[in-house]
Length: 177
Image 1 (cartoon, one colour):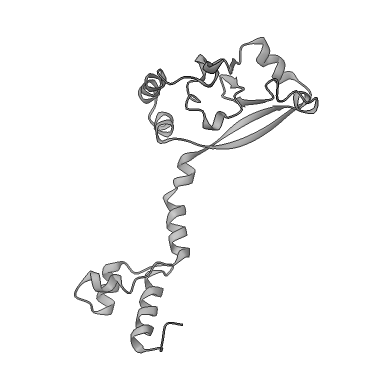
Image 2 (tube, rainbow, N blue to C red):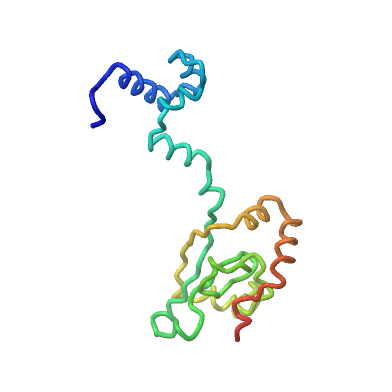
């Protein structure tokens, strides 16, 4: 408890409720309603509730903009036979090919996979045989995109080419062989 209940505390409570209402008062409307000369005085009354803050965060769409879902193929034969530590067992479906790098979601080259040994083009026999397997488990995984990746997706080919140029000097995961 913060002390005695006073008319001033009641006024502050009502002001906060009006500021956090379903149809909230703006700071300037609240300033007028309270009769303040300065918006700074009003800011002391306008406390944002955690619910309103969470709604504002959700409305901003940060997660929707920065997350993408990607299909993942799991070769259950490899996993069930204990060979997962020795040969690829998880494949990220890139549309044009598959990536067998276990840490694809952390790979800086995940939009420039064609130059990597973990990349398997869809037109290859290996890719076709894998996708035809009976014991294949299909899943989706959500990955967080970097700002550059999101821009490349949203803004097109020029940014994609810039990303490829920037990544040219960064070693691919397989270059440590």
